[in-house]
Amino acid sequence: MTDGLETALRCVRDDARAGRLELWGHSTVVDENVGTPVITRELFDALHRAAGIAAEFPVGNAGVVHVYGYFFSEVLTPYGYKSDRWNDGVLARALGLPDSAFRLGDSAAHTPLERVTAAALPLLLSPPADAVEVVDVSVGDVPTRAVVTATADGSGVLCYGVDEGAGMRLVTVFPVADAAAFAREAADDAPRLRWNAALALA
Image (cartoon, rainbow, N blue to C red; front, side, top):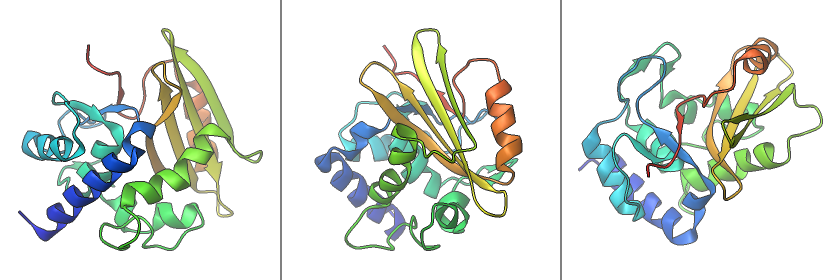
């Protein structure tokens, strides 16, 4: 086991004990752009065991998958590697944070998921007045929300959540190159689960 994975598993356990994973919804590891899993079943299972969550591949806790799983994804997507959002500093800067804010092992006091949740959940639950777009649509009887914010250079952030009956929960957050164009696309898209969101398996 790599040092990085040991750190991730320790952080997942800390997040589970603190109840932070309950603020996240569900996600599939099968990326909608490439059509294949972006992490292995072995990693998926190891992370969910550490979280104490009974998940059936490929659908699991979105925080476990999107934060910790993505750190180790080696699948190239049209938008780069999934780990880029946590490591390259673009998302962190767009949220007004230091480049290293979401990196694994960068803080002894706070887990990556704790830091991501603190930055993203307020955007989802109380979108800022200057948000470029807030798209509230229901997929069947499941409410979803996409919030797009912009920075001074026109880039921005997408924060997305789904309410499966226990309130709006985070699914994903990532940077976008053109906030206005991305917002138009999000607003015009037919109602559907987006950005690898999934519903809990029965």
